[in-house]
Amino acid sequence: MRETIHFSLASHDEIMYRNEADLIHGFNCLVEACLETDSRLLADGFMSTHHHGMAQTDNIRALTKIERYAYTRYFNARYHRRGRLGEPKPFSLKVEGIYHTIVALNYVNRQGLHHGLSPTPFGYAFCSANAYFRSELGRTTLQPLMADEFRYHYLPDRSCVPKSIRMDASGMLLQEDAIDTAYVEQIYLTSRNFLFQMNKLTDEKWTEQQKSDHTDAPIITLELIENGVGDIDIEQLLRNENGRINQNQLTDLAVCKIIDNDYLPMLSRKHDMTIYDLSASQRATLCNTLWSDIPRLYNKRTNVAQLKRCACLKY
Image 1 (tube, rainbow, N blue to C red):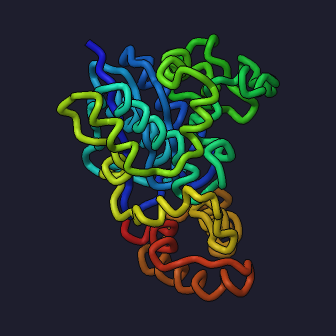
Image 2 (image 1 turned 90 degrees about the vertical axis):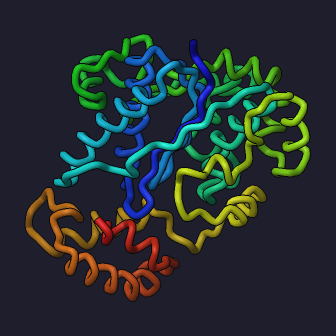
């Protein structure tokens, strides 16, 4: 029997998704895993070091195992890397009750907002907030699609994804096709309530509403949702709900782009040079260089922890 499960895969000290192509492939691997395990994907949110998902499944262990294996194969081949990617065990949480489910969906759909990547949940592409109530919210324009003969370039080997799940021109499977949007829309009831839930600030009312579910399930909080992610500043995530984005702080993807596109070509003539081709001492030197260069050349801020994870210094 399927249960509603929130789950997350994370890498505490190393970037899992270095650019948009990685995020696209990560989502496609998640869809593939849901199909192989006959699970229904409800929501997703992909960040640089982790991703969250919600699914109705009777085998969350198989789902996360298939997803991790497919994505790790891709990542290791692309970046000349070896070994397991991410923490040994994914985090999972059974979600019971209508209000518990709404709050869990809210947190997953608002990942871009909480992590300071967009002033609203809808401005971040690698999160499922834009998949629901598309007609009611005026999102009816059909984006350019990938030709069928090129789909295999963006899917895991021996993919079982049917052509009924369309793929956009970037290679990403359409979230509105891959997600059980009809079920989620029934949970939110109306597009108006969905917009309200996406824009409201976290408060005690969310806790009180969950108590009315009369279930033994734990109260869903942002801290519980992020439990498997690692060292996260929950207070900062809650402040980010106000939508005030720090334009001076580089994102992880921006730092990775600087490393991969601007600095690695200067270190080697190999066209496919990656951060994993450098020794630990070379990565440390690169971090020191970036620490002084980024404020001077890019007029942006970074921090030591960000530089270390983007340079995979602990790998």
